[in-house]
Length: 84
Image (tube, rainbow, N blue to C red):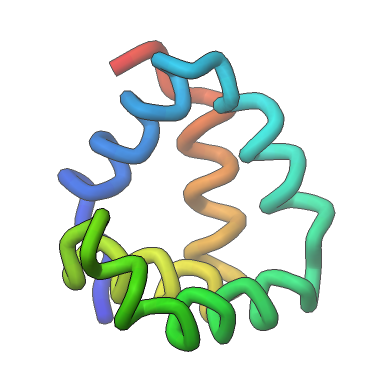
């Protein structure tokens, strides 16, 4: 799955709203292989989580967490981006 900049902006907007952008970026940068476990957790909880979140967002989150390059790029996006 390719990067969807609209989804990243949506996630960033939510994280900025709650003041969690730095915490999220730090977690993504330092979690290393744990992000793969996070992706598996997203897949595992998707049937229940889809009641609260759209499936395409959950799939995008899991795909981002599975891909180290995307994970680092999103962390950089959070750190370097201005508030959306």
